[in-house]
Image 1: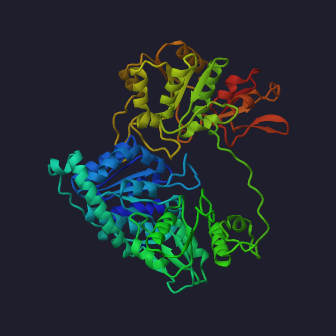
Image 2 (image 1 turned 180 degrees about the vertical axis):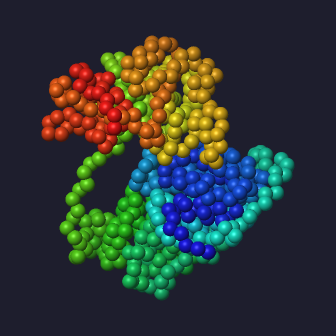
Image 3 (image 1 turned 120 degrees about the vertical axis):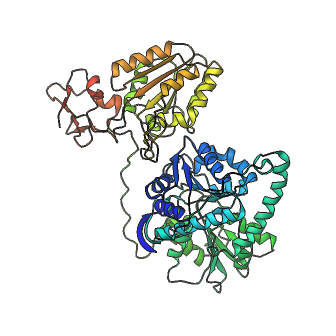
Length: 618
């Protein structure tokens, strides 16, 4: 063993490698992304790593390898699980021969997601075990245990870190390479009675799954990471899981007057341990992110065993129903719960949340000033800005809907572009545009999608449009990377996650193969040409595609630097009002270029009515 200072995702990656990982597949999504990237960095010889085109594909690749006896892992964020749920819900009935850990990183807040979806519900829904780490060290150790449970019970298992586990850093103890487990997959053995899902097989396996989970509930009651602290404490208790448990322990430093239940496996729930915890208590406060999963389980168990204990938490409004828990917030929850049973007039305190949130410690410092509001915007020089602007100019005055997508291009909704009328989930804009067209055929429907998302989930939508004879324009914003999540490769980049150089999959060729006849590629930073392509596409019948191709400014060298000739500038501010580039600023009443942000893309120069903006060398 030795010590390393690691990000949580890196610790999980090293833990999986130490567990004998043979194959890992995933799709990038914050906060899960760095796990697969670190496996690629530290992998042992023979470990296969891939970014799949989407989570469904990743799940199926890992399942196939597990059928052959491999130790496999799938990585994604919480909304990616929705994409992967089709194979997952059948895989629970089939099971695996090797082992398979499904890492789903939840995002309380949410910090970088559409939703605050709680994977613990999916664990219950799919009847699969779930492991919920509370610290970076525990994540490293628990991921190895998750592989062992998966192999022992022949089932996929969930591993559910949240953002503050994934992105936290800590100095932890890790194994030396000579301590790593080495797995030798047996290979796939043909057995249609096991691997081919038929109704009769599913019926039989459903009964086995229920029995297995009942057994696991008992097993998990003895699992060392589920535990009761301060069992001899008074009549109140705290139940917590995940990062909320770590925060609760920090808040409870120096005091042992509250009994504590740590829940490391929210499903199957450690019922016998929970009964031991609840006996003799009058009240329990549940601390968890995101939904009241632990709270509902304890309410059920208290009722089942007729235990006269009041369970508090989200359902009783004693804790917030959304967002992250912080140390300050948990400390206030705990202090309020420990010191107040009844409200100020003697009534039962169904909600102490407002008191807790407004309470200030006696030694509190003066409140910090509010941070300046800094809404997310497209980067200075981002070719997406030019793409959106070209479509906006070309379609000005026409009845048009602009269907956006998840990723950098969601930022097209920001003023002054205002080019994102809808945004649901990855690739959905393609089909939403079709739906609007069916109801309002006089509407010009445009759907924006990135190059990575094109491969992940947009192709089927475009096929649907062609097959069903819709009329719409698909706009592919091709910047040759997966930009929002950290510039991962995809089929259009010509490189795999293992560093292999492969043939690029041509988006234009795919579109023509689907049946599109109008497919044009243009550099969006050539404003005049870009506007012309959009106008021509809008007048064509059927399904059309425009590929705006220009590299992401975060991975390419700046082209130079723009400058404003103040003698020519008339102060019309068109460059600011039209495109909203953060590299163009007003200083002492004058429009100027921020040298630290400008990339020299030249879009602003093409808009200036007096030719006051030009390029200079750095």
